[in-house]
Structure formats: C-alpha cells, structure tokens
Length: 420
Ligand SMILES: Cc1cc2nc3c(=O)[nH]c(=O)nc-3n(C[C@H](O)[C@H](O)[C@H](O)COP(=O)(O)OP(=O)(O)OC[C@H]3O[C@@H](n4cnc5c(N)ncnc54)[C@H](O)[C@@H]3O)c2cc1C
Image (cartoon, rainbow, N blue to C red; front, top):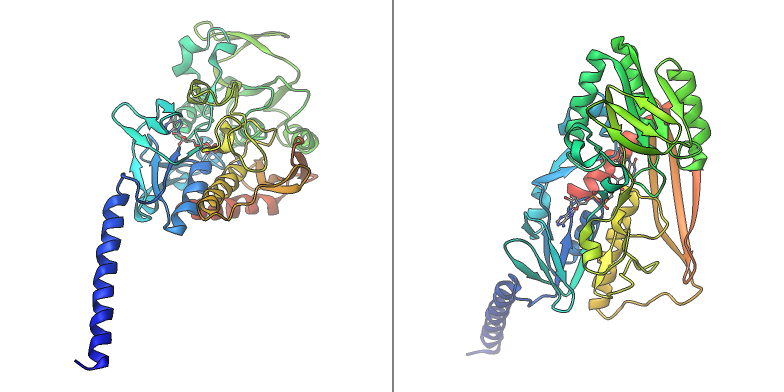
C-alpha cells in the first residue's frame, strides 16, 4: 500500500469513527443529556427570543413547553378586535421551531422541582440544566369581587388567542350600541397604551358604522399610561372621538355585577351593556409555587437570572424588574438569556461587576389611535449593577401616519425574527 492509499484509508476510518461518534451524540441528545439541556417554558415573545438564540448554536438540546398549537401576537391585534383585519394576520405556526430541531411539548408546566432540575407536566417530567421561564401573565381576578363568577362574559383579551372573545363582544356592541366600559388598572400591567388604543379603534369603527352609544374608559390612573403618553393620547381621544369616548380618571373599580350590568367604583356606579375589564396582572402561579417571587419573579439585572436560582432565567412579563411589560423587551431579554447560557457553557461568560453601566433590551410600543395614525413610544433602559434600572421614554408629540406605518413594519419584522 503506498502512502497515498494509507492516508486515504486513515481518513476514511477517521471519517467513519466521526460519523459513529456523531450519531451517538445525536442519539444521546434525545432527552438523555449528551448535550446540555435547556428547557424553555412558554412559546410567546420571551420564549421565542431565547429559543432562536439557543437553536442557532446547535450546541444545546432544547425543549419548548407550550400548550398552544401556534403563536398569536397581542401587539397590533386590535385591528382584528375592531374588525379591520382577520385573526390570521396576527398568527404564525410553530413550523420553524420544529424545523430548528427543538423538541416541542404541547403541554402546561405544573411544577418546577428546582432540587432535581426538572419541570413537570401532567404527563411527563422534563430534566434541564438551564431553565428559561417566559410564562407571561395571569389576571388578578380576586381584586374585583363578582368578576370570577362572570369571567366568560367579561373577557380581558390581553393574552394570545383571547382576542376572539373580545372581538365577538365588540362586534355585538357595534351592532347594538349602548355603553361599552373599558377599565384600566394601575401599572405594572402588560402594554400600558393598549387599553386606550382599544378604545380609539373601537370608536373609529363606531363612527364608520353609526353605532349609537359610547365607550367609557374607567382609568385607575391620573392619565393615560405611561405618563409621557398622556398628552398625545388624551388629545387624540378628545379631538378624534369626543362624541364616542368618555374618559374618567383616578377611579378604582370596587366590584362588578354582571347580571345587573353595573360596575361599582370609587366614584359611583357605572352601568354598562358590555364591559372589557382589564384586570391587574401578575406572573402565573407557577412562579410563586417554585419560590421564585411574589407578584412577579425576582431577577438580577442585567442577566435576567432568578435571584433564587442561577440555573433559571425569567424573561418577559413574568419578571419583576421595573421595566415596561413589552413584547419587544421580552424578545430581547430572551435572546440575551439564550446567549448567556451559551457563553456560560463555553466558559466565556463574564458577569458584570457592581457599578458597571449595562444597556438593557430596548422596546418600541405603539398606541394606534386609528387605522392610519399612531403614537410611537420608544423605550431605552440601562442599569448600573446593584441599582434599579433607568428607563427613558421618547414619545411622539402627536399621533401621525409615519408611526402607523412604522407599527406595521415593526410587527412584521418582529414576527419574522421569531418565527420565519
Ligand atoms: C393589546 C396589546 C398590545 C400590545 N402592544 C405591544 C407593542 O406595541 N409593543 C410591544 O413591545 N409589546 C406590546 N404588547 C405586550 C406584549 O404582548 C407582551 O409584553 C409580550 O407578549 C410578553 O411576552 P412573554 O413571553 O412574557 O409572554 P407571552 O407572549 O404571553 O407568552 C407566554 C407564553 O407562555 C405560555 N405559558 C404560560 N404558562 C405556561 C405554563 N405553565 N406551561 C407552559 N406554557 C405556559 C402561554 O401559553 C404563552 O404562550 C401588547 C400587549 C397587548 C395585550
């Protein structure tokens, strides 16, 4: 055998050995942990941010646990609720998640066993080395006596797929007219401009359809939230929808009687025909059950690591740092958590030191006031390690057409980044 032949043979043998080794890793990675295991709970904005960053590396075995079959965006879905676009415009399949080789478990996580590093669904235990919790929010129903018993008649519609129930309610109101009450809780709640946006787009539809009646916005706050939005939003509501929207500020709902259709408040009774009660919000019970926080998960900034458990990251609206509850921030924090997990595994992660100034994921939120006008809210934030984050708002002085177009472009870009 000449040297060329022996070299070829050696290469072939090495190649065969490598294939055998790779297939062993491939087999081992199916749930047994040859690659480090990352479990992502929640397939919304935060979970998809983490998953995209992790999957791009090919270095970890990823499981996503999510009960829904696909994704639905809350941002911009007011266009569906008010009857201007089909629901499908705001929905995407999880086909890309499957194509990335992520194991997708269509289920709800009921428990986290932190000692055993295991999440538990009704049918299986899923082990992890790192856990990313992106579970969004639940509503604090107990804050409004009378609500829980009438939950089905009073959809909130601030979580994916709940928009359909609100859309049906709004369609009935637009046909029948009457009083449509929208309540606004005190922050922290998901997407502060959203209740006012909802009022404006339904009011636009009332004008177009000639609906008789009014929308009553019952706001627990002094003015539209966040505060820098108050002036342009109040101006839009007054100038564009003075005949359709009545705005009442600094009023707290006390109880609701869905049978008599009366909302009792600190400023008296508000009778209604339909009501969109936007309740105060908190992280889902799973977070409390796992001892990760009270109303929201306690996290470190800038890492989004749980204060209670270094192997757990909490991103998106479940986390309790005083940052806006925005999909844009959720997605960015998810990406950052994914990148940090990869850097940690590669031995390259360098923790920020006390006093270091670190930029946090930014956000753009949109307050649409009509199908063609919107107010942009640009949020940037940073943290000096050890201190609370500094959050800066830059808000359009008035609703405008460029921001309305920007909102749709932003939505498409974000949905593509998540699921294309
Ligand atoms: C009307 C409206 C307009 C908005 N507009 C904007 C905007 O213009 N810009 C912006 O940046 N943000 C906007 N937002 C906010 C944005 O939608 C949220 O901040 C974002 O969805 C938060 O992402 P998340 O991953 O924390 O939660 P979600 O996107 O809600 O995802 C949570 C996921 O976790 C799953 N889940 C929950 N519990 C479990 C469990 N135990 N086991 C398994 N899965 C579980 C849920 O099924 C869900 O899919 C808007 C919100 C609303 C309601």
